[in-house]
Length: 77
Image 1 (cartoon, helix red, strand yellow):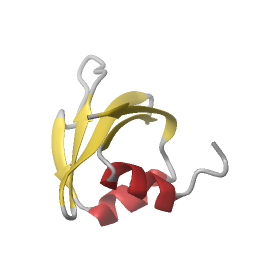
Image 2 (tube, rainbow, N blue to C red):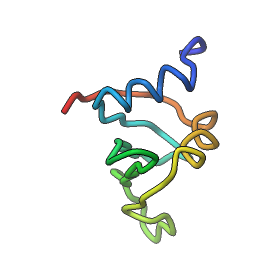
Image 3 (tube, rainbow, N blue to C red):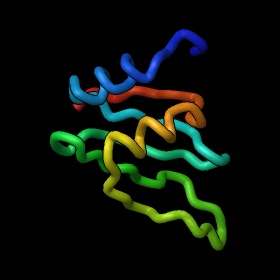
Image 4 (tube, one colour):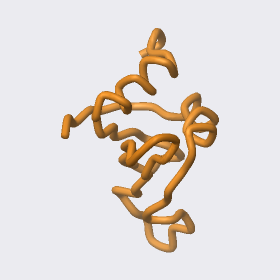
């Protein structure tokens, strides 16, 4: 998905999609809760995983994280 831009990703979140993605060999789910408020959930865990299971994040955080995301999968609410 080389041509998949952050702007398209952000629009998809705005349109109500839940998006699964991989980051640091872990699977996450992200979706928009309200303006500038997104929920990131850890789907797959490894033993003694230091990552938070649920996290509320801002658009700035999502933008910074986007370039490290891979293997996108969509689910519409």
